[in-house]
Length: 362
Image (cartoon, rainbow, N blue to C red; front, top):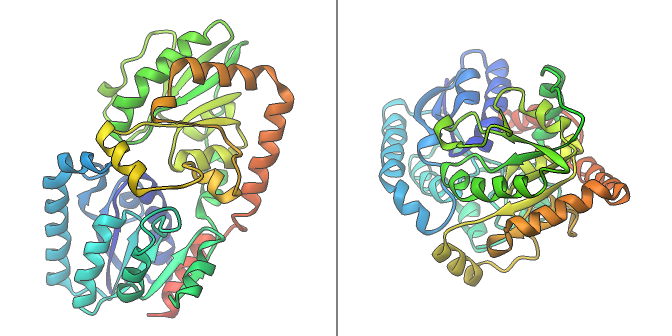
């Protein structure tokens, strides 16, 4: 039995790797092929195209990746034509995966969407596309199923797999040593454009708070080390990243999956993000949301301070960081809020429940 599985960025690769492992255990004769990264490759997925070549955020930033996106689409659709898979699993990455879902629908291939696109935040009309082209939405956030049920879309809520992934991997990682000073972790993102925009600001922030805290740069393993030009006093960590995050007193994290990882680890943090000026202006017109960070969306209140676009300035980040480092009560309140968010994400076994849902329709 053959199946297609497609992830377009590092977070999707994490989820895709976990789901692929469970599916292959359920179906010993299953051969999975698709797009992803190291996690999916380690889980036995034949990579037809690496997701590191297509990951991008921002409207106009997509143009720089158009050639790779088209090439990836051709590789995947050609494989489908040649192999006629039994089913396909599409993981987030909506603009690319929606086009692929349309192709799969024409081929009458059963399609599962794992990790819902954030239609609850913006471009809500996309829900009509999902109703027409997807056989089952496998959602991981507690409020998503109600939204799909209201629209008559077949869906199942399985809980968030990252809770189990983070806690399991942390147990197998080496303890991260630290000095006598407080320690802040810098996490500029997992995409090349994110690192280029965020890292200089985070390094300047670390310089401002240097007399109060040491800084640790937690690097995305999928990116070239040449992107990270850091002063000698800042340590750079790639391996055992969860242990490194857990060792920190405070984190400054680019918006994305890493913010949820920080919440699961119970480490107080700030959310930061910048995109290109044109993408930001267009985004302000298209997207009107109360929160940018996923943790705040789940909590339905501003649990984590957000410093987005022009507010992402070293002086503001340093001031907020020092506030939390000096105010234990503020840090404790944030930890309590984070614990409540993690509790709402459901019990362990999300990957097994996702595999059950897929198996039930095959």
